[in-house]
Length: 449
Image (cartoon, rainbow, N blue to C red):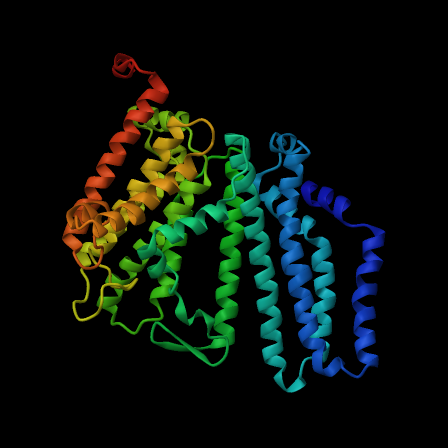
Protein backbone atom coordinates (compact mmCIF):
# COMPACT_ATOMS: atom_id res chain seq x y z
CA UNK A 1 0.00 0.00 0.00
CA UNK A 2 1.14 3.53 -0.75
CA UNK A 3 2.99 4.70 2.41
CA UNK A 4 1.78 8.29 1.99
CA UNK A 5 -1.81 7.15 1.49
CA UNK A 6 -1.61 4.97 4.59
CA UNK A 7 -0.16 7.83 6.64
CA UNK A 8 -2.79 10.36 5.58
CA UNK A 9 -5.61 7.87 6.12
CA UNK A 10 -4.30 7.28 9.63
CA UNK A 11 -4.46 11.02 10.25
CA UNK A 12 -7.84 11.71 8.61
CA UNK A 13 -9.99 8.65 9.31
CA UNK A 14 -11.35 8.25 12.81
CA UNK A 15 -14.16 6.20 14.36
CA UNK A 16 -16.00 9.39 15.35
CA UNK A 17 -16.05 10.69 11.77
CA UNK A 18 -17.07 7.30 10.42
CA UNK A 19 -20.35 7.31 12.33
CA UNK A 20 -20.95 11.06 12.72
CA UNK A 21 -20.94 11.90 8.98
CA UNK A 22 -23.59 9.33 7.90
CA UNK A 23 -25.63 10.05 11.03
CA UNK A 24 -25.80 13.76 10.20
CA UNK A 25 -26.55 13.28 6.51
CA UNK A 26 -29.02 10.42 6.82
CA UNK A 27 -30.68 12.08 9.82
CA UNK A 28 -31.28 15.23 7.79
CA UNK A 29 -32.65 13.14 4.91
CA UNK A 30 -34.99 11.31 7.30
CA UNK A 31 -36.37 14.60 8.66
CA UNK A 32 -37.07 15.82 5.13
CA UNK A 33 -38.69 12.51 4.25
CA UNK A 34 -41.00 12.67 7.28
CA UNK A 35 -41.99 16.25 6.35
CA UNK A 36 -43.05 15.01 2.87
CA UNK A 37 -40.66 17.46 1.23
CA UNK A 38 -38.08 14.90 0.19
CA UNK A 39 -39.28 14.41 -3.36
CA UNK A 40 -39.21 18.16 -3.99
CA UNK A 41 -35.89 19.23 -2.53
CA UNK A 42 -33.87 16.13 -1.66
CA UNK A 43 -32.08 15.77 -4.99
CA UNK A 44 -31.15 19.45 -5.05
CA UNK A 45 -30.02 19.46 -1.41
CA UNK A 46 -28.02 16.26 -1.88
CA UNK A 47 -26.14 17.74 -4.84
CA UNK A 48 -25.58 20.98 -2.91
CA UNK A 49 -24.28 19.00 0.05
CA UNK A 50 -21.89 17.13 -2.25
CA UNK A 51 -20.60 20.47 -3.58
CA UNK A 52 -20.12 21.90 -0.09
CA UNK A 53 -18.62 18.80 1.54
CA UNK A 54 -16.79 16.87 -1.16
CA UNK A 55 -15.87 19.61 -3.62
CA UNK A 56 -14.99 22.54 -1.37
CA UNK A 57 -14.12 20.82 1.90
CA UNK A 58 -12.21 18.21 -0.07
CA UNK A 59 -10.28 20.94 -1.92
CA UNK A 60 -9.42 22.53 1.41
CA UNK A 61 -8.24 19.19 2.77
CA UNK A 62 -6.09 18.55 -0.30
CA UNK A 63 -4.40 21.94 0.08
CA UNK A 64 -4.05 21.52 3.86
CA UNK A 65 -2.21 18.23 3.38
CA UNK A 66 0.71 20.32 2.13
CA UNK A 67 0.26 23.68 3.85
CA UNK A 68 -0.20 22.22 7.32
CA UNK A 69 2.93 20.12 6.99
CA UNK A 70 4.88 23.19 5.91
CA UNK A 71 3.62 25.03 9.00
CA UNK A 72 4.50 22.09 11.24
CA UNK A 73 7.95 21.96 9.60
CA UNK A 74 7.53 18.31 8.59
CA UNK A 75 7.37 18.89 4.83
CA UNK A 76 11.16 19.06 4.46
CA UNK A 77 11.43 15.62 6.05
CA UNK A 78 8.95 14.23 3.53
CA UNK A 79 10.82 15.84 0.65
CA UNK A 80 13.92 13.89 1.67
CA UNK A 81 12.07 10.56 1.74
CA UNK A 82 12.42 7.91 -0.95
CA UNK A 83 8.84 8.30 -2.19
CA UNK A 84 8.44 9.16 -5.86
CA UNK A 85 6.52 12.29 -6.94
CA UNK A 86 3.65 10.22 -8.31
CA UNK A 87 3.37 8.16 -5.10
CA UNK A 88 3.36 11.34 -3.04
CA UNK A 89 0.79 13.05 -5.29
CA UNK A 90 -1.94 10.44 -5.40
CA UNK A 91 -1.29 9.38 -1.82
CA UNK A 92 -2.05 12.90 -0.59
CA UNK A 93 -4.96 13.39 -2.99
CA UNK A 94 -6.76 10.21 -1.94
CA UNK A 95 -5.76 10.17 1.71
CA UNK A 96 -6.44 13.81 2.58
CA UNK A 97 -9.86 13.74 0.86
CA UNK A 98 -10.99 10.35 2.19
CA UNK A 99 -13.60 11.76 4.57
CA UNK A 100 -15.06 14.26 2.07
CA UNK A 101 -15.43 11.41 -0.43
CA UNK A 102 -16.99 9.23 2.28
CA UNK A 103 -19.63 11.91 2.79
CA UNK A 104 -19.89 12.48 -0.95
CA UNK A 105 -20.83 8.86 -1.66
CA UNK A 106 -23.75 9.21 0.76
CA UNK A 107 -24.84 12.52 -0.82
CA UNK A 108 -24.73 11.10 -4.34
CA UNK A 109 -26.63 8.00 -3.23
CA UNK A 110 -29.40 10.20 -1.85
CA UNK A 111 -29.33 12.29 -5.03
CA UNK A 112 -29.72 9.20 -7.23
CA UNK A 113 -32.46 7.77 -5.02
CA UNK A 114 -34.65 10.88 -5.21
CA UNK A 115 -33.88 11.93 -8.79
CA UNK A 116 -36.75 11.68 -11.27
CA UNK A 117 -36.78 8.12 -12.70
CA UNK A 118 -37.75 9.27 -16.19
CA UNK A 119 -34.57 11.40 -16.33
CA UNK A 120 -32.20 8.75 -15.02
CA UNK A 121 -29.65 9.27 -17.80
CA UNK A 122 -29.38 12.98 -16.99
CA UNK A 123 -28.99 12.08 -13.31
CA UNK A 124 -26.05 9.80 -14.09
CA UNK A 125 -24.46 12.59 -16.15
CA UNK A 126 -24.86 15.07 -13.30
CA UNK A 127 -23.30 12.59 -10.88
CA UNK A 128 -20.34 12.07 -13.20
CA UNK A 129 -19.88 15.83 -13.67
CA UNK A 130 -20.02 16.37 -9.89
CA UNK A 131 -17.38 13.67 -9.30
CA UNK A 132 -15.10 15.00 -12.05
CA UNK A 133 -15.47 18.57 -10.79
CA UNK A 134 -14.42 17.44 -7.32
CA UNK A 135 -11.39 15.57 -8.68
CA UNK A 136 -10.36 18.59 -10.74
CA UNK A 137 -10.61 21.04 -7.84
CA UNK A 138 -8.84 18.67 -5.45
CA UNK A 139 -5.89 18.31 -7.81
CA UNK A 140 -5.84 22.04 -8.51
CA UNK A 141 -5.90 22.82 -4.77
CA UNK A 142 -2.95 20.50 -4.21
CA UNK A 143 -1.10 22.17 -7.09
CA UNK A 144 -1.82 25.65 -5.70
CA UNK A 145 -0.64 24.59 -2.24
CA UNK A 146 2.62 23.27 -3.70
CA UNK A 147 3.17 26.58 -5.52
CA UNK A 148 2.45 28.45 -2.30
CA UNK A 149 5.00 26.61 -0.17
CA UNK A 150 7.51 26.72 -3.03
CA UNK A 151 7.33 30.51 -2.99
CA UNK A 152 7.20 30.74 0.77
CA UNK A 153 10.33 28.64 1.19
CA UNK A 154 12.28 30.37 -1.58
CA UNK A 155 11.24 33.96 -0.90
CA UNK A 156 10.53 33.76 2.85
CA UNK A 157 7.08 35.27 2.63
CA UNK A 158 3.54 34.35 1.72
CA UNK A 159 2.30 35.45 -1.69
CA UNK A 160 -1.33 35.30 -2.73
CA UNK A 161 -0.93 34.42 -6.38
CA UNK A 162 -4.65 34.60 -7.07
CA UNK A 163 -4.79 38.25 -5.97
CA UNK A 164 -1.75 39.12 -8.08
CA UNK A 165 -3.20 37.41 -11.14
CA UNK A 166 -6.56 39.11 -10.62
CA UNK A 167 -4.87 42.50 -10.52
CA UNK A 168 -2.85 41.55 -13.58
CA UNK A 169 -6.01 40.86 -15.59
CA UNK A 170 -7.19 44.38 -14.80
CA UNK A 171 -3.93 45.80 -16.11
CA UNK A 172 -3.92 43.72 -19.32
CA UNK A 173 -7.28 44.61 -20.86
CA UNK A 174 -6.60 43.26 -24.36
CA UNK A 175 -5.38 39.87 -23.19
CA UNK A 176 -8.18 39.51 -20.63
CA UNK A 177 -10.90 40.49 -23.13
CA UNK A 178 -9.57 37.98 -25.63
CA UNK A 179 -9.11 35.01 -23.30
CA UNK A 180 -12.14 35.29 -21.00
CA UNK A 181 -14.81 34.85 -23.72
CA UNK A 182 -12.98 31.74 -24.96
CA UNK A 183 -14.69 28.35 -24.88
CA UNK A 184 -18.05 30.09 -25.06
CA UNK A 185 -19.88 26.88 -25.93
CA UNK A 186 -18.54 25.02 -22.89
CA UNK A 187 -21.56 26.16 -20.85
CA UNK A 188 -24.06 24.36 -23.08
CA UNK A 189 -25.02 21.68 -20.57
CA UNK A 190 -28.24 20.65 -22.28
CA UNK A 191 -29.05 20.24 -25.93
CA UNK A 192 -26.27 19.66 -28.44
CA UNK A 193 -22.80 21.09 -28.96
CA UNK A 194 -21.23 21.69 -32.35
CA UNK A 195 -17.53 20.91 -32.25
CA UNK A 196 -15.34 20.64 -35.35
CA UNK A 197 -18.46 20.48 -37.51
CA UNK A 198 -19.99 17.54 -35.65
CA UNK A 199 -22.91 17.50 -33.22
CA UNK A 200 -22.52 16.04 -29.74
CA UNK A 201 -24.89 15.62 -26.85
CA UNK A 202 -24.26 18.50 -24.43
CA UNK A 203 -24.19 16.30 -21.32
CA UNK A 204 -21.86 13.70 -22.80
CA UNK A 205 -19.59 16.36 -24.27
CA UNK A 206 -19.16 18.14 -20.96
CA UNK A 207 -18.59 14.89 -19.07
CA UNK A 208 -15.74 13.97 -21.44
CA UNK A 209 -14.32 17.50 -21.30
CA UNK A 210 -14.45 17.56 -17.50
CA UNK A 211 -12.72 14.17 -17.40
CA UNK A 212 -9.96 15.59 -19.59
CA UNK A 213 -9.55 18.64 -17.36
CA UNK A 214 -9.45 16.37 -14.30
CA UNK A 215 -6.62 14.42 -15.92
CA UNK A 216 -4.75 17.65 -16.72
CA UNK A 217 -5.19 18.87 -13.14
CA UNK A 218 -3.74 15.62 -11.83
CA UNK A 219 -0.81 15.87 -14.23
CA UNK A 220 -0.23 19.47 -13.11
CA UNK A 221 -0.17 18.45 -9.45
CA UNK A 222 2.28 15.67 -10.28
CA UNK A 223 4.60 17.99 -12.22
CA UNK A 224 4.57 20.51 -9.39
CA UNK A 225 5.38 17.72 -6.96
CA UNK A 226 8.34 16.84 -9.20
CA UNK A 227 9.55 20.43 -8.86
CA UNK A 228 9.22 20.30 -5.09
CA UNK A 229 11.08 16.99 -4.86
CA UNK A 230 13.73 18.38 -7.26
CA UNK A 231 13.08 15.82 -9.97
CA UNK A 232 14.08 17.29 -13.31
CA UNK A 233 11.35 17.70 -15.91
CA UNK A 234 11.02 19.33 -19.32
CA UNK A 235 8.27 21.75 -20.42
CA UNK A 236 6.66 19.53 -23.08
CA UNK A 237 3.61 18.80 -20.93
CA UNK A 238 3.11 22.55 -20.49
CA UNK A 239 3.22 23.00 -24.27
CA UNK A 240 0.77 20.15 -24.79
CA UNK A 241 -1.66 21.74 -22.33
CA UNK A 242 -1.54 25.01 -24.28
CA UNK A 243 -2.19 23.12 -27.51
CA UNK A 244 -5.06 21.25 -25.84
CA UNK A 245 -6.76 24.48 -24.72
CA UNK A 246 -6.42 25.96 -28.20
CA UNK A 247 -7.72 22.76 -29.82
CA UNK A 248 -10.79 22.72 -27.58
CA UNK A 249 -11.55 26.41 -28.12
CA UNK A 250 -10.93 26.34 -31.87
CA UNK A 251 -13.35 23.47 -32.36
CA UNK A 252 -16.38 25.66 -31.70
CA UNK A 253 -15.94 27.80 -34.82
CA UNK A 254 -17.26 26.76 -38.21
CA UNK A 255 -14.24 27.69 -40.32
CA UNK A 256 -12.88 25.47 -43.05
CA UNK A 257 -9.80 23.36 -42.38
CA UNK A 258 -7.24 25.78 -43.95
CA UNK A 259 -8.71 28.73 -42.04
CA UNK A 260 -8.86 26.71 -38.84
CA UNK A 261 -5.06 26.35 -38.75
CA UNK A 262 -4.59 30.12 -38.57
CA UNK A 263 -7.34 30.45 -35.99
CA UNK A 264 -5.79 27.68 -33.90
CA UNK A 265 -2.41 29.45 -34.00
CA UNK A 266 -3.98 32.73 -32.93
CA UNK A 267 -5.93 31.07 -30.11
CA UNK A 268 -2.91 29.09 -28.94
CA UNK A 269 -0.78 32.26 -28.86
CA UNK A 270 -3.30 33.98 -26.56
CA UNK A 271 -3.53 31.05 -24.16
CA UNK A 272 0.25 30.65 -24.18
CA UNK A 273 0.64 34.34 -23.41
CA UNK A 274 -1.74 34.16 -20.45
CA UNK A 275 -0.15 31.00 -19.07
CA UNK A 276 3.29 32.57 -19.44
CA UNK A 277 2.18 35.33 -17.08
CA UNK A 278 0.97 32.63 -14.68
CA UNK A 279 4.32 30.83 -14.85
CA UNK A 280 6.27 34.07 -14.40
CA UNK A 281 4.43 35.19 -11.28
CA UNK A 282 3.86 31.76 -9.73
CA UNK A 283 7.45 30.54 -9.49
CA UNK A 284 10.51 31.85 -7.70
CA UNK A 285 13.15 33.69 -9.71
CA UNK A 286 16.68 32.85 -8.65
CA UNK A 287 19.71 34.19 -10.58
CA UNK A 288 21.60 30.99 -9.70
CA UNK A 289 19.09 29.00 -11.74
CA UNK A 290 19.77 31.24 -14.74
CA UNK A 291 23.48 30.70 -14.16
CA UNK A 292 22.97 26.95 -14.39
CA UNK A 293 21.10 27.38 -17.68
CA UNK A 294 23.92 29.52 -19.12
CA UNK A 295 26.54 27.03 -17.98
CA UNK A 296 24.64 24.10 -19.50
CA UNK A 297 24.39 25.95 -22.82
CA UNK A 298 28.13 26.66 -22.78
CA UNK A 299 28.78 22.97 -22.22
CA UNK A 300 26.32 22.13 -25.05
CA UNK A 301 24.10 20.16 -22.72
CA UNK A 302 20.94 21.54 -24.23
CA UNK A 303 18.56 19.04 -22.70
CA UNK A 304 19.89 19.93 -19.25
CA UNK A 305 19.52 23.64 -20.13
CA UNK A 306 15.84 23.09 -21.00
CA UNK A 307 15.27 21.18 -17.76
CA UNK A 308 16.95 23.90 -15.69
CA UNK A 309 15.30 26.79 -17.55
CA UNK A 310 12.57 28.70 -15.66
CA UNK A 311 9.14 27.77 -16.94
CA UNK A 312 8.27 31.32 -17.98
CA UNK A 313 11.23 31.44 -20.38
CA UNK A 314 10.26 28.18 -22.09
CA UNK A 315 6.65 29.32 -22.21
CA UNK A 316 7.61 32.75 -23.57
CA UNK A 317 9.70 31.17 -26.35
CA UNK A 318 6.82 28.88 -27.27
CA UNK A 319 4.43 31.85 -27.23
CA UNK A 320 6.74 33.82 -29.49
CA UNK A 321 6.90 30.94 -32.00
CA UNK A 322 3.11 30.62 -32.01
CA UNK A 323 2.73 34.38 -32.44
CA UNK A 324 5.17 34.41 -35.35
CA UNK A 325 3.26 31.56 -37.00
CA UNK A 326 -0.04 33.40 -36.42
CA UNK A 327 1.51 36.51 -38.00
CA UNK A 328 2.54 34.53 -41.07
CA UNK A 329 -0.92 32.96 -41.28
CA UNK A 330 -2.44 36.44 -41.16
CA UNK A 331 -5.92 37.50 -40.16
CA UNK A 332 -9.22 37.58 -42.01
CA UNK A 333 -9.73 41.21 -43.12
CA UNK A 334 -13.50 40.71 -43.34
CA UNK A 335 -13.69 39.95 -39.61
CA UNK A 336 -12.61 42.11 -36.69
CA UNK A 337 -9.12 41.31 -35.42
CA UNK A 338 -10.28 41.90 -31.85
CA UNK A 339 -11.07 38.20 -31.65
CA UNK A 340 -9.04 35.44 -30.04
CA UNK A 341 -9.03 33.44 -33.29
CA UNK A 342 -8.28 36.29 -35.73
CA UNK A 343 -5.35 38.23 -34.28
CA UNK A 344 -2.72 37.88 -36.96
CA UNK A 345 0.26 40.13 -36.16
CA UNK A 346 -1.49 41.41 -33.01
CA UNK A 347 -0.54 38.10 -31.39
CA UNK A 348 3.12 39.02 -31.91
CA UNK A 349 2.60 42.41 -30.22
CA UNK A 350 0.92 40.73 -27.23
CA UNK A 351 3.75 38.18 -26.98
CA UNK A 352 6.40 40.90 -27.02
CA UNK A 353 4.57 42.87 -24.33
CA UNK A 354 4.42 39.71 -22.23
CA UNK A 355 8.18 39.26 -22.61
CA UNK A 356 8.62 42.88 -21.53
CA UNK A 357 6.52 42.44 -18.40
CA UNK A 358 8.10 39.16 -17.29
CA UNK A 359 11.61 40.40 -18.03
CA UNK A 360 10.83 43.43 -15.88
CA UNK A 361 9.51 41.13 -13.14
CA UNK A 362 12.70 39.04 -13.21
CA UNK A 363 14.86 42.18 -13.30
CA UNK A 364 13.16 43.51 -10.18
CA UNK A 365 13.43 40.08 -8.51
CA UNK A 366 17.20 40.15 -9.04
CA UNK A 367 17.45 43.71 -7.73
CA UNK A 368 15.17 43.41 -4.70
CA UNK A 369 15.65 40.99 -1.83
CA UNK A 370 12.58 41.95 0.21
CA UNK A 371 10.12 39.87 -1.84
CA UNK A 372 8.17 42.81 -3.29
CA UNK A 373 9.12 42.42 -6.93
CA UNK A 374 5.60 41.26 -7.89
CA UNK A 375 3.90 44.31 -6.41
CA UNK A 376 6.48 46.66 -7.93
CA UNK A 377 6.02 45.01 -11.33
CA UNK A 378 2.26 45.47 -11.12
CA UNK A 379 2.81 49.16 -10.40
CA UNK A 380 5.09 49.52 -13.41
CA UNK A 381 2.59 47.69 -15.64
CA UNK A 382 -0.19 49.94 -14.36
CA UNK A 383 1.87 53.01 -15.16
CA UNK A 384 2.82 51.83 -18.66
CA UNK A 385 -0.59 50.44 -19.62
CA UNK A 386 -2.96 52.80 -17.83
CA UNK A 387 -1.62 55.87 -16.05
CA UNK A 388 0.97 57.34 -18.44
CA UNK A 389 -1.10 56.84 -21.64
CA UNK A 390 -4.07 58.53 -19.98
CA UNK A 391 -1.95 61.45 -18.75
CA UNK A 392 -0.28 61.94 -22.15
CA UNK A 393 -3.62 61.74 -23.94
CA UNK A 394 -5.16 64.35 -21.66
CA UNK A 395 -2.11 66.56 -22.19
CA UNK A 396 -2.46 66.28 -25.96
CA UNK A 397 0.82 64.38 -26.40
CA UNK A 398 -0.52 61.47 -28.40
CA UNK A 399 2.91 60.30 -29.55
CA UNK A 400 4.12 59.59 -26.02
CA UNK A 401 0.83 57.85 -25.20
CA UNK A 402 1.34 55.59 -28.23
CA UNK A 403 4.94 54.89 -27.22
CA UNK A 404 3.76 53.74 -23.79
CA UNK A 405 0.68 51.84 -24.94
CA UNK A 406 0.32 51.29 -28.69
CA UNK A 407 -3.03 50.57 -30.31
CA UNK A 408 -2.83 46.80 -30.51
CA UNK A 409 -5.72 46.29 -32.94
CA UNK A 410 -5.91 49.58 -34.87
CA UNK A 411 -2.21 50.12 -35.72
CA UNK A 412 -0.79 46.60 -35.73
CA UNK A 413 2.63 47.21 -37.41
CA UNK A 414 3.30 50.20 -35.12
CA UNK A 415 2.24 48.13 -32.11
CA UNK A 416 4.63 45.33 -33.06
CA UNK A 417 7.53 47.77 -33.46
CA UNK A 418 6.88 49.52 -30.14
CA UNK A 419 6.37 46.19 -28.33
CA UNK A 420 9.68 44.92 -29.75
CA UNK A 421 11.41 48.05 -28.45
CA UNK A 422 9.88 47.59 -24.99
CA UNK A 423 10.89 43.91 -24.91
CA UNK A 424 14.45 44.71 -26.00
CA UNK A 425 14.88 47.38 -23.31
CA UNK A 426 13.50 45.06 -20.63
CA UNK A 427 15.81 42.24 -21.71
CA UNK A 428 18.81 44.59 -21.53
CA UNK A 429 17.82 45.57 -17.99
CA UNK A 430 17.42 41.89 -17.10
CA UNK A 431 20.87 41.08 -18.47
CA UNK A 432 22.49 43.88 -16.49
CA UNK A 433 20.70 42.81 -13.31
CA UNK A 434 21.80 39.22 -13.87
CA UNK A 435 25.42 40.30 -14.37
CA UNK A 436 25.35 42.35 -11.20
CA UNK A 437 23.64 39.62 -9.18
CA UNK A 438 26.14 36.98 -10.25
CA UNK A 439 29.38 38.93 -10.64
CA UNK A 440 28.92 42.12 -8.63
CA UNK A 441 29.89 45.49 -10.07
CA UNK A 442 33.15 44.41 -11.72
CA UNK A 443 32.48 43.69 -15.44
CA UNK A 444 35.80 41.89 -15.83
CA UNK A 445 34.53 39.13 -13.60
CA UNK A 446 31.75 38.42 -16.06
CA UNK A 447 34.14 38.41 -19.01
CA UNK A 448 36.53 36.03 -17.24
CA UNK A 449 33.67 33.68 -16.45
